Length: 117
Image (cartoon, rainbow, N blue to C red; front, side, top):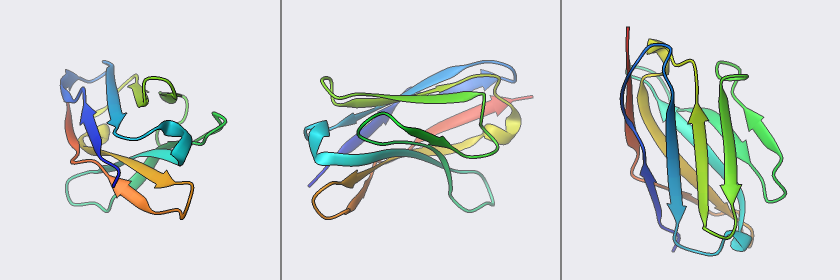
C-alpha cells in the first residue's frame, strides 16, 4: 500500500506563490507517474500537473507557465511550485501516484489552498 502525505497548503494573496510537497511511503522507483490534482468548490477534480519517472512533465492548460512540478527520487518526494496564484486556483490539492507494476492509483488526503483576491 502506498501512502501519500501532502503539505504546504495555506492562504495566500492573489499574485503570491506556494510550494506543495508530497511524501511517498515507498521507493520512487516503484512509481511511474506522480500527479497533482485539485478540486475547486463546485467543480470536478482536474489534473494540474504530472511527472513521470524520467522527469517528463505535463500540465493542465490553466496552470501552464505558472506551476512547475519536480520529483526527488532519493527523498521520495514530489513538489508543486505554484506562482502567480489567482482566486481560481483555490481548492483542495491532491497528490496521486501510479504504481509501475500494475498502474494502481493512490491518493493523498489533500491539502487546502486558498487564494484571496
